[in-house]
Length: 127
Image 1 (cartoon, rainbow, N blue to C red):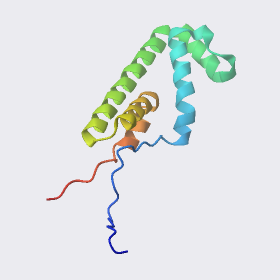
Image 2 (tube, rainbow, N blue to C red; image 1 turned 60 degrees about the vertical axis):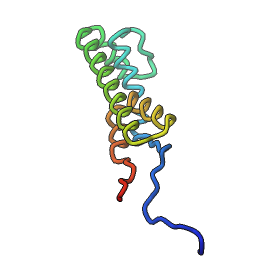
Image 3 (cartoon, rainbow, N blue to C red; image 1 turned 90 degrees about the horizontal axis):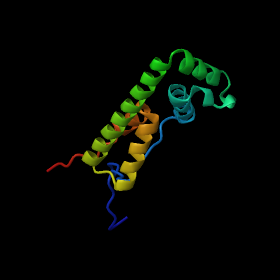
């Protein structure tokens, strides 16, 4: 292959984005929804969540302060993880589109998304 440069090192993709494991993608959003509803409107949790709806209603009615504080803690924690992913993406040179995806993913899926982002680093430049 004359004239073609080949590079054995993998190129850094500025548009790289990876979702967390499918298990977390399926489980976390409904559980966050039930937690939010238990903290703010325990009687409005949809019936199709089955026993989790009953548990959320119980927690929201019998332990409203705990439910509210847990909800606020989760919001603050996920917001912090989203800011961390923003900082990591900007420092590592990700594109704007990829950065937005990582921020939203970290806000929804939390640490499971941040753990996917941590090993993604651009190659170091050698002089």
